[in-house]
Length: 237
View 1 (cartoon, rainbow, N blue to C red):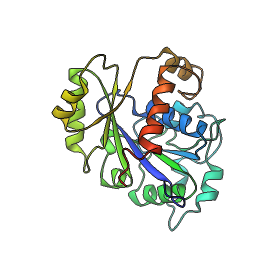
View 2: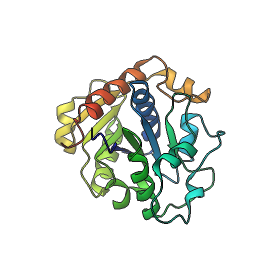
View 3: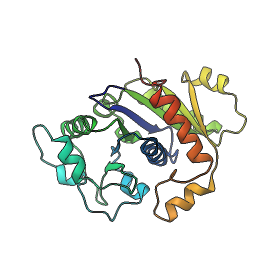
């Protein structure tokens, strides 16, 4: 990782309900636990707010609507201090409960400011908003998809809509599906699998970020953080 500029990883859902927000929260939580400074950006105005997934929706702090009309360079350190954060220290720039369009220049300015202050910046990329101004911010782009025929078809359609290649595919509940066949069909390497884990819904119901405790999901996120982010398996050298 660049010591002066954090790595930016985008995570996009390959279909409705694929779970990109949950994966962002899980990887952010595990990366913070591994000793990295982590921030997460909500780039999906239709998602209801990434702060809810992290369990910090009642925490005070800046949301996208507070940056509307901002111009010029943002001070990354000051922005980081004013964002809501989890108990472990992950800072989150989220949409609030009201729909709010984010101007491309503001999105880029905020992302640039944050990556100057963290080791890892995770972006929750909404399928409907996965345009140039979002995906081109990312050093690496990961797609999460359901491990079903319909889920993989949706992933292929989503990948075809994006303006840059997807670097890795994470499969949910894929069972014994063969990675090689999936990679050949979609042209995207399978870089991880997320098994069903009851702890995820339990954490969400309790207002806790998923991945904060034990379980298969936390283990899978640990592996993704280590293999994809720290070892630059997805981020081009």
